[in-house]
Length: 297
Length: 297
Image 1 (tube, helix red, strand yellow):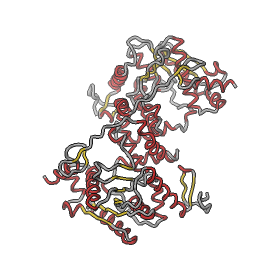
Image 2 (spheres, chains in turn purple, green; image 1 turned 90 degrees about the horizontal axis):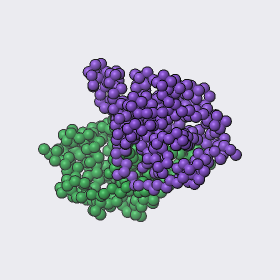
Image 3 (cartoon, one colour; image 1 turned 90 degrees about the vertical axis):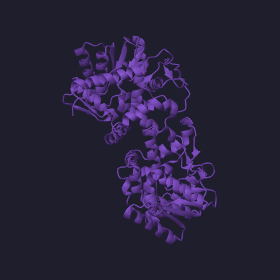
Image 4 (cartoon, rainbow over the protein chains, first blue to last red; image 1 turned 30 degrees about the horizontal axis):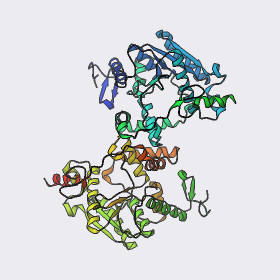
């Protein structure tokens, strides 16, 4: 098969687009998908500085790389979760990436801030690790973006992440999430950062290929706390469908984005400000502050 | 494990209900699920005669058996699709079932009516076989119910069928189907029969167990035209999820039934009467009559 763009031999097939690219032109395909995501959802204003949440995995480092190449002022934010050697390796990958490209990086370590890592925080509060981790990340992304003056935080969620999350929301009919899942969430109260996911048009496999071609060194190991997470099962299911019907994930998630307002009844927005920290919450005290109450007691 | 009802040794486990039954008591569980389905959706009025669509497979014969045991006047309707030995075996299983139980059976053979089986009809009209078959069945269920004076047609769709159909509708965001999928569809214009699916609370595996315990002899072979159908892939996916999270299918489909009016925006109802045959259709001529035009030309 030949590269769609330059007609040289192709190295990566994209069955869902019924096409293929050589390594060089595949990078243009990736930039084009990210440009479309940014423009269709008005994710970033030109020259607006953006805080990129970087775990050290392939998606977040690819995102940082792409945004930088597209000319954005992208500053990295790494949260060190304090999960032994996994977190040490993650941070060192992020630091090496920033150093070799001369990029600005902000780090925050739970161990230093709380004297505890995420595993201990989850244990002390009797919360599932992934759930406590999500709460903590949301809080610190908001807090640090505000303190450092960023109006937008970008995360590396890809098409597989978004499609599997949507599948989970559908299988359990999580009505409060079904209308609001979006690759671009508006700022809450104008005070807190917007959240954007510029990789939502690219699959996990495509991003993995991009990191190889672009020589991005990342931590391959998955987080040891995420083992057995349902999300992996949903991804696996969608991959099985993708194999027999290329484009299933794309159609499912992008079809959702296109039709959700027409399909779903509007849900009430009942967000308030947390009485302790002021961040957005549905109750009176946000889940982060409730978590912290239990850590402290 | 002991039987939940009589405490004798159990022979069938139901992980999604976290329980188990002996063979005898399992039948009561099955009757109870069907009774609940009938009553929650007001499917049948007492002593109302019901036309049961029977293919010769386990679900439809189990349904006929159960409705009869619950005291309903259930008359069988078998459509012989004219698919060689598969259809011959199917019809003979249905006839044997009716004969040994002294039940009334109506049969209609495509080969006699059209001089063609469903395979030839699909080929002549360039339609996928399952799609042409669905159109034909819908038409004849309506026609025969009306001619014979039945106000309701029951089909053997089980929980796996309904959950996998719903999954397909969601993955492709078929908005016109997303609000109307239901185990009990009202009569169109008051002229055509209501459609009910009293087995929707029971899984395929539970119905298979019921047919063994109740000594129902059915055609095990799947329709040879359905090979590779996406529905099998969706069922397989849901079965994988069910294994790690018992109750997934139940929660997905019954959750949908419970929440669909609150989750989905109402869709316009734009059904009209077909100008040729008078049956309900979205256009001016129904899909059956359009199919027949192409068979005739």
